[in-house]
Image (cartoon, rainbow over all chains, first blue to last red; front, top):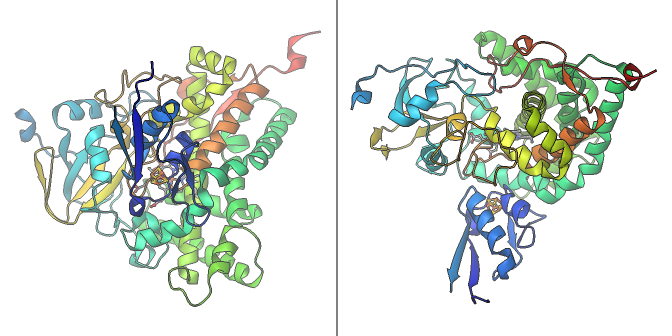
Length: 72
Length: 414
Ligand code: HEM
Ligand code: SF4
């Protein structure tokens, strides 16, 4: 059954220090800039199969850069 | 509560098992998670042992990383002001905005993508060292034959430091990491490393290559002060990266191997499922927490943590080792579980200073451990465990040496 859950990802870019936990744990959703290593968001409305890795990236980011809004 | 009566004690450092932090942490975490701590310089500060408190501290901008104002956990003297000043390049000891400037300048060289691109070269370096071990035959000291040279060679190539100079800088850096150290001895090693790095920077200005130091110099256009770096700054950056780059992964590789050999069931499972290496590496980082005495911060203002008032100017020590064994956060924290779900371990720290080199360390470990296990299916200790010399006396934990042996094909038949 499709629960119709949507997820949105927001980035507080100023706080990013390029630790790379996001690009490591959710490479489909996050990359790091060639210029200064900070986060590049690839998809701000990830499909359900990527929700877990989005949550993991948010939990592991050391600087609370990634926030996740979920509504059902 | 009786806890408030307790006399202020120094940091517990006595381990009862080589893989576990001092047992005293457990009592503190339960009874007095924010406890007064007597530092070697005579000052009194605080020790944090809970995962939640440690993460909160390291993410709290009311605390400074300035090591000149902080007390150190196991040594009385600090260093020279010019080493940690605002334009010294030592980002480890800086706060925003100085810290941010250097960090943004450097992270591009340590991204997940860049570090993965190094994998073929790291595989080559690992294979070369395994070949040499195999040729020489057992017994072998894993530290000098494998664990130390591999990360050392990799960081040298990344920075543009000649690996042929390794005997010099490895001597200075291991001196600087000793706990028992006279101040003049420390300053001599520090000055030697400083002079070495300044000469190297001058050489790179004259004859650039395509490694990190030259690359930083090349971005310097004499116009944008954000990216222009003095020789002093370049030397500071170079020293920090050189020390951090080879003393850390080296100790994880040797201590990690010793840990695996001491947990035969888990080792067997990892040999059968080498694809589990990513989780295994995270678990080894958590379980071993080689930054064994934790990291310090100084309160810039009066702050309350866990019901205790920290006053401006006081040092707070975040015990990464205690936080990584907190049962409130990790199920069965005392168990090594190489298949543990990804968790917020703090072996690389937390907050703005979270390890810059973590993606490099991960790639190195994810290549080196499986290659070592594959090459030597019968790898084992060559001495009784109690004869393995542990690095209780160094800022970065590990083993001083790890004598290993294995069965050679010729040992088995005919
Ligand atoms: C397994 C290996 C490693 C461990 C356990 C480790 C641990 C840590 C920790 C705990 C910190 C935070 C210090 C603080 O907040 O005060 C840190 C920072 C740092 N590490 Fe590592 N590290 C490792 C490998 C490396 C490597 C290979 C490099 C090489 C480039 C490196 C470079 C740095 C630098 C430059 C910083 C300072 C970052 C900043 O202040 O923003 N580390 N590391
Ligand atoms: S994990 Fe957080 S700090 Fe690190 S690169 Fe990603 S967003 Fe930035």
